[in-house]
Image 1 (cartoon, rainbow, N blue to C red):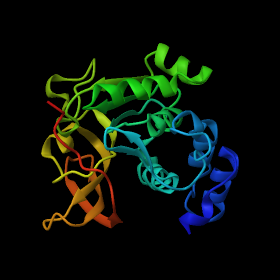
Image 2 (tube, rainbow, N blue to C red):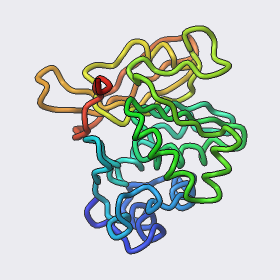
Image 3 (spheres, rainbow, N blue to C red):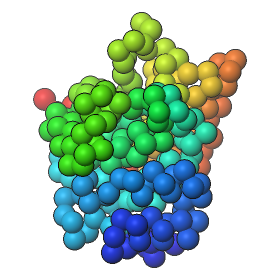
Amino acid sequence: MAWRCSGASNRELVENLFQNGLIESPRVKGAMLSVDRAHFCPSPNTAYLDTPQSIGHSATISAPHMHASALESLLPYLNAGSRVLDIGSGSGYLTAVLAELVQPGGRVVGVEHIRELKELGERNLGRSQRGRELLSDGTVEFVVGDGRRGWVDRGAPEGGKEYWDAIHVGAAAGEVHGGLVEQLRRPGRMFIPVEDTSGLDQYIWLVDKDKEGNVNKKKLYGVRYVPLTDPPR
């Protein structure tokens, strides 16, 4: 049904996703309505298509239905005051929507291994008054780093262990990296695309850590993401 969800405006796109069941929660719907996807896409003429689009540096902004799926999957951990790590933040779109879902008092850090993409996310978010506020008050921050190692945020314990309520990974990993699991809180959840052992297919995995620290991994559905790679030299 995803191909039917394109719209002529941000509102029409989100309403179509909602009507087709790709957005289920009113909270996710409201957050996506509040962030204009056109501010994060390379062309305003294609901003409201339900398709992935290139943003340069072999990266893409994912299709809106994939962003909706990630948000719905992480929603139980996206509450007021939650801390969220967005690895492979790219255009900055999902980072912005995540920030809306954790207010008041929440924080979202977008990690990019390419400085130009980190700066792109900042510029895109700064195209709206709301986005400029999120950047200026520190609610959203974009940083350069190797997302496979997570991120030790300011105020986090040494090693960043058990700090993030939710982790979103926006590029396909070769494995569910143990360091990311360590950085999940008790309880916490990670949404991550992972390549299978053949290297030909990718699947979304949900990784949950419960209050006792037990970890459960659940394989969901097949996807096609750009790879989570080494930084350019």
